[in-house]
Length: 147
Image (cartoon, rainbow, N blue to C red):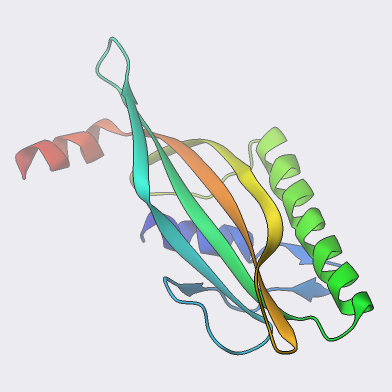
């Protein structure tokens, strides 16, 4: 399972007053209203400690196409985004992270809060950026060195 798949599985646990994401697509935002996608950003930050252990931070943009016909819709959309930010922060505080095969997750945090990225007729595309920081396991590092 890829890191994106693990992060999607984890994000699908979010449920704000019965309003939850049923599905999150990868790399492409659907034109359908009430659709979600996770898009990996093209930069990974890497650090290596004195023992040679590598820590990586990958950034993902979560996009949501939501109805915005009324002011009430827009208020609810913002409440949904704020609740998700708080949920991610609470999960991070409790160290409840997605399980990944490449290593051990050290942190998941929102680096860009939920905001309107693009407005179209009767809907808007909202987005937020999530950073996942993890320590690579020795077996994952050794596998890369062999290639």
